[in-house]
Amino acid sequence: MNMTIRIIGSCGLVAMLVLLNQPASGQDVYVYPAKGQSDEQLAEDRYACHRWAAAESGFDPSQFEGVAAPRTVRVPVPRNEAEGTANKGAITGAVIGGAIGSHDGDTVEGAVIGAVLGTMAGAAIEEQGQREAREKAKAEAQREADEIARNKSELALRKSNYRRALTACLEGRGYTVR
Image (cartoon, rainbow, N blue to C red; front, side, top):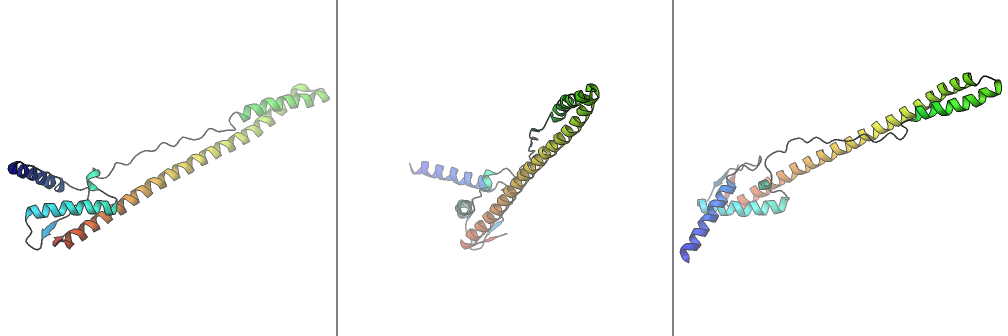
């Protein structure tokens, strides 16, 4: 029974040493025993300080595999609600122009003038709709970029707070930390 406990304890110690010797995504910490602590004591103290620092900072470097690759965010351009207005304007203008021209006896000329004016008005409305759709997409892309930057900044702050907490804990236990 006593031998089993020693084996389990040794395995746990080996696991802690392996875990603690892994690169911590930019959090390399060099710890030197300032009061003659043993390697076993260092491993126990470092693991305890790691757990405490992770809880205090909200950042656990063992949960991150280094810096995440930049991600591409696709921001769709919203549908242009005014799409097709140029065609509708041409048809409406032709009908109205033909009706007005029929009073003067020149239905065809009235329809052509109406179609041209209707197309121009409809095209202007359609272009405004496209411009608004692009502006909405640009605003959404900026919002996404701001969110990504906020998340990166927050992660960097939590990472820095973890490092400070880990250092304070280890120094409080009598180690020199670099």
